[in-house]
Length: 370
Figure: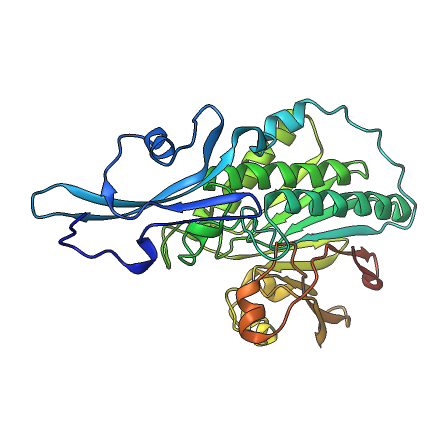
């Protein structure tokens, strides 16, 4: 084909199969009417194969007014399609388990769900591996909660619950779920965690905005902080728990805020994603929140996410209670940040952080990573 307008190298024709997944870049061809034509052109029977995820394209108009388009898509056998559980299906097909009687200690267990980034693929796998990992964490959590027998629990969802498509260009080629599928999956997973925790009484959910789940166009954030798509998912889960008659409540940031403060047994628990501050600057940011009268300024414990590794630091003292203030950076649950490992040489195992807050405040000895 004689092209009058060059295409970038990454949009030239190529096809590769890695671990059973086939990726195709068509190179510049005439615009197709539907995705079935793409399968036909490359010899895939639409009765046996389908396009996985989204079809991306790079377009150039020719002097005669026609368009040449290079398409990128993934092909998978239909029988290998991932069957994502729908949120309402998960809520209606399970028989509720009986509640577990709490101990008289009055302790409340906090579960930090951080950086799940559903839809992301990496060195730890893709969506099937993520689902298995979260299921394993829930099993361990159920065992640990049976041992602790708290009077209630807190689910602290620290943001980046799904990967999105607007942070970096590579997401268009490496994600294995569409945006709608990412939101469906993470909503189901949040509900599954609430199911486990609900056996121990009331569940308080704290959720915040984050960079991956923000309403974005490329690097630019659109709308208000409250327009975060991760918070939208939480609103849908809240509808399901309410319809099911479950004792669950949500605390989310005010319309123009990005952090939240919960009162847990008289202890202020702050939650923020962490994209608001540079690496190693969380304490400085927290101190300025106090000066500015922001929600987490009054926190005794601040939970941060975003940086994908565990870090615990005592810092300052609450002038009213005399208790030490603690900053806790949560471990990740994602499929791996390989770009960071390749550039910085650092990596961290995934983990689910839990700890207790008693009437005496933060119980450091109870802190565990599952």
